[in-house]
Amino acid sequence: MPEIKVTPLGAGQDVGRSCILVSIGGKNIMLDCGMHMGYNDDRRFPDFSYIIQNARLTDFLDCVIISHFHLDHCGALPYMSEMVGYDGPIYMTHPTKAICPILLEDFRKITVDKKGETNFFTSQMIKDCMKKVIPLNLHQTVQVDDELEIKAYYAGHVLGAAMVHIKVGSESVVYTGDYNMTPDRHLGAAWIDKCRPDILISESTYATTIRDSKRCRERDFLKKVHESIERGGKVLIPVFALGRAQELCILLETFWERMNLKAPIYFSTGLTEKANHYYKLFITWTNQKIRKTFVQRNMFEFKHIKAFDRSYADNPGPMVVFATPGMLHAGQSLQIFKKWAGNEKNMVIMPGYCVQGTIGHKILNGQRKLEMEGRATLDVKLQVEYMSFSAHADAKGIMQLIRMAEPRNMLLVHGEAVKMEFLKGKIEQEFSIDCYMPANGETTTVTTNPSVPVDMSLSLLKREMALGGPLPDPKKPRTMHGTLIMKENSLKLVSSEQALKELGLNEHQLRFTCRVQLQDPHSDADTLHRIYTHLKNVLKGYTIQHLPDSTVMVESIVIKVSSSAEDSNTKVLLLSWSYQDEDLGSYLSSLLKKGLPPGLC
Image (cartoon, rainbow, N blue to C red; front, side, top):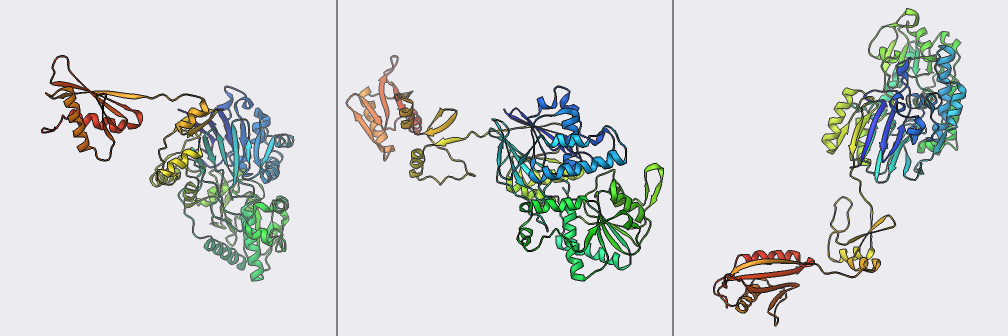
């Protein structure tokens, strides 16, 4: 039986370093190629030795598909293509192709130029890597080769994020990347066809969470920021440059305007100017409201939010600062956090998920003394708040997507093992499908039952409908009688008459013969007459004839009688029928085996 194999090289029972290997129909596809934000050693990148112990990456992989620009999904791409060595096609959407190199270069600067790390990709490697990228449009089917085709669907989450449907022959897999099933202030909700894939590979970051209403969260967020500002405190909001950043900027901008607040709001790094440029460029990827208002006013041009300079961090008085990156693991957000951590008036609001090992994860878990670089300790006195503005699907959203796509099997990645286990149980219980959650380096093998497409002749369909059967329904299989013919690698179901005509063949009659022994003391002719009378009494509505050639015919069934050589009272009946009358023939043989009733003339 054909099978599909899925092996996570990263994000198996873990968040970060997404990299999933799929083998389907003889093709090998790598889904995402991310880095882990919680590590600074070899564990930062996926373990490519799993593939290259046997061959070069280019020889092994048919293509690489990147779902979106977050570094835990694309951060290892230049390392894989330029340092490990891969020359094949890399697919991603247009916005991802535009934004990905900016984030990669920004991260390279922090890692190499500021921290002085070696064994890392260079600026030139990023450029060379991006030359291998082939951009995808939404809902466009792309033929990677003669057999492998891919199609991208809108995933919400961040600008340019896509889910991807991979198909080889009749086997298929859907990979969600990161997605959001609820629209927000700047992006729409994820959507996919009822494509019924063999496996749906879904992220499960919030596998056990059902988030409260978005409005309540926004109200709480604004209340906390406002209270902090009123008492003269500074508010740090660590974000990634694209996504939640724009969402929260739109929220604060409208609140500041409405409340006529004067405290400054800043946004760190030049990345945001570029980010907003891309939002304007790819306006079609945003939601309906932003597209509508775009003509009168661009939602991404902010009146109250100014560019941040690092000297502002020491300014007296209240302020709100959006700083990157979002998990406080490096960069400007960490620098500001160190400066403001000692004052209880100040506040840090974590608006998204933090990977284990990052400062963000530590403070959310209540750590109040942090060991920083050079063995220095940092006392955390500021208020720490967590408010999920994360653009990941929650448990409800994941279930919603399963209902949308109707997969035959489910596979969870990009989540914590305990939470995955809980969701796995829920999915299996509600949808009665198998759900898998492989760890990194562990292979899940799913056997597929490929459905073979068959064309059906219109005349045969009309004939079946004339017989009064139910109308065709994809959810209720129905038996069709016809002849299956194969022409030019495609199958067609036609009537037997049409098949004979198309193939230039003569019809052959196939008949079944059955012997039945009967005890009857009469002559052969009398026994045959008695059988004729008996069948006339039993079978109403059938054509029954007693023919001059000493046979009885019931429809196409012929009955002959002869005496046994050993005993003249033992009659041997020969019943012969065509394939069409198989049911009637079986019934008659059973009836005559019981013998003839007494008193028949």
